[in-house]
Length: 162
Image 1: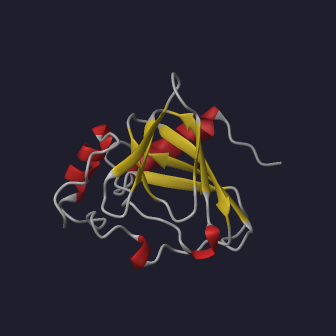
Image 2: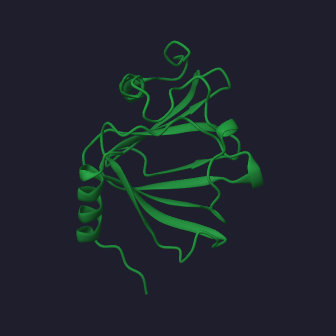
């Protein structure tokens, strides 16, 4: 039996906080080829998850909040916010992202951990499935983009094209 307790979530969040990318995952699936990918994802404030989509294989993603606070944003092809769902103790706990939907996640509190489920096998996101209207990871403009996502509401358009 696999089990994730509060101590494991806290340890994972601490690893994320110490990581240069400010995030860390704990896989429950045995291999990247498993047909169902199951993992805990710790996201600390300031981490940048470039908006992306999954066009190959009809991959959907389900996120369930375990600790902390986060916001899931969806976008249209031009980078306009089409949806925002805040996940937290006083709000929503689970979101599911449909295949081929532009999306990103932003951490709103230290110690944020989500449980993620999606169809496998794992395939890295191809460059064509990363949003051209958002900075690449490591780009100096990524921090400003994260700050924008922290409060961006439906109808808002991503900052100036990059």
